[in-house]
Length: 200
Image (tube, rainbow, N blue to C red):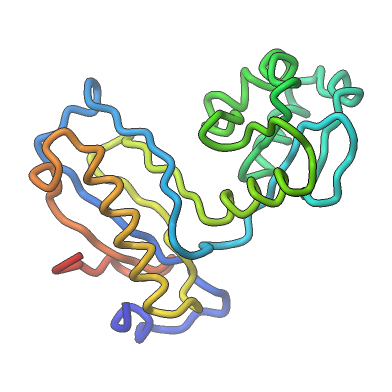
């Protein structure tokens, strides 16, 4: 991590990405699609919530009464692009699926039992789901190399290392042949070349 940070400085805070290259792995029949909770917050995430009434805890609340405003697919697509995560009251999920599901689903942003469905909209439940989202990443195999953001370059090296190890271990555990399916592991900043990791 230290070697990466010694590279040329940019005029913005770069993301730190973990890259895991796979081998002897059939992407068509052995899909990996998991949510991983990291030890440390990676970045601020924009969250949209589908609730009965507005709530300032989220970046945007779309209430049940506002669903009819999203009849135009352009408006729905814009909403889906604008937010990193979506959460919903469990009681609203049928309506969410009908109104937004066609676009949330393919984008991998549909609220799910693993992440994003609220039984209640009380403060405790909302804070719990927000805290979880701040530390969670999704690892999904689409090609023989997977890349996920594990933090920002201004984070402590130890925290970045903790996140990298947690992500790596969770992903390897989901592979059919575990470490035998891993060809190589790399780290990179947004604007840097990947650096090979010798040991995790």
